[in-house]
Image 1 (cartoon, rainbow, N blue to C red):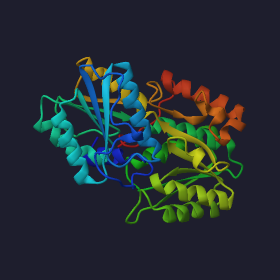
Image 2: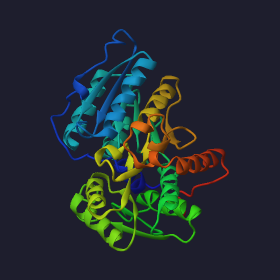
Image 3: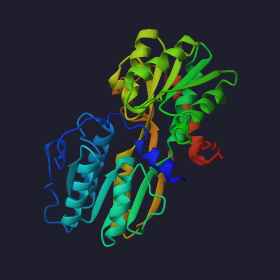
Length: 349
């Protein structure tokens, strides 16, 4: 995986990384867990932006809290607002000498890579991104997003009445194609004659421009697509607006975006950041450091909201199609068993 690809990975379509508040503020109103105040283990999580209503970052914070409870560790969360405050938070964390300093997404990649090289006795963990040439004290957890996107494609292929599906993605890059090519492959696996089309947001703010994302979604709708994968990070809200106005249905990413636009979102290709974080913290505390672990369907790192235990409360339209979910479960199991291999566009050559 190239450095550019890994850096793009950290953007990973985590919606809402555009808000800002003061650096070093604590998440959720809590600066440190009390349950492990006397523990020798300690964790500091650094987010690239304020958590606020960002579900992706909240999952990371929840994972840190769960890791603290599971491994009897104190937990602090430092929220950043820009590259300068990220560095300030890293410096502050290093001074505290915790067991592990955790960073989330590409936005912290360069600074974490440098900090790990400069502080070989400190353990660092990256979530949703990884370094090109990591030091032994820099561990990473990344995701096989393409496996979950294949499943949303299967759903779209089973549901489409227009025999036409599409994707609105942030950029036309190999990594972002993890939300494009597998979606089409999944749809074609159940509907070989389905028409597919992709539109890209581009511009100065490809990961947050709701207006441009909405316009690209409208192009797909005008071309006949009745199901659209939203893969434009903060721009997804614009796609959902287009869905509400034009009558097509959309799929979200990373977290449950059905809640953002009830009645317009079918399902979500989710990333279980909390699962990856908890597992990675355990590995580091056990002395298994360095390198990276990729979390897919088999590892419980990616999946669909519609296949979660609490799907009935998700507001996702897929719950109204139990027959489709049964078929999707079978495909999921075939991917986990290795019977079906989903091609990773990033390594497809």
